[in-house]
Image (cartoon, rainbow, N blue to C red; front, side, top):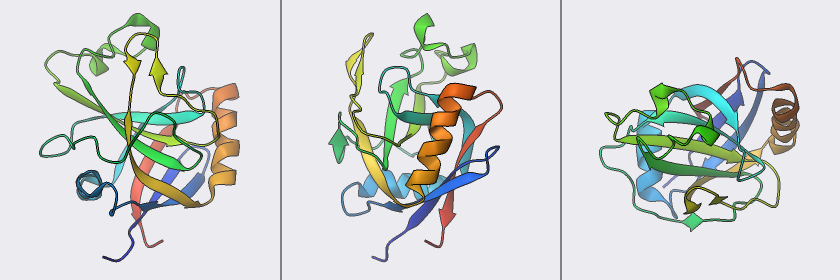
Length: 168
């Protein structure tokens, strides 16, 4: 199979990086993501995992992918897929709107980009939260990391994290 690529962008800041899908390590997840692209949503900066930005989406796969190519210690450039039951994020400390924690929405998908070292997927409310590593950034991580630091310091309000097919 030919390598496939995704552009990941912070739209308001005009910054993007390119990632290669890990079709050989997470084929089910990569297929579901590729078929769902483009995707975009409000960006959040992690509270617990550390150097992570992410967006939340309604489930888009025909069935949730199994935990293929899992990690609890993502490295810079990892793109991860997490899924949560509609009420798992309901703890007030998470700060999500009622739209994200509805019991009638059985699954919420979290697509994340890790931009720096020393990440640990340990949540005080839930314990270990393994993610599926489905992509790795191959170009532009330095620019994206700078934008992520700005997002952390200046705020995420009004910013969108987008995932689109790329020619590579």
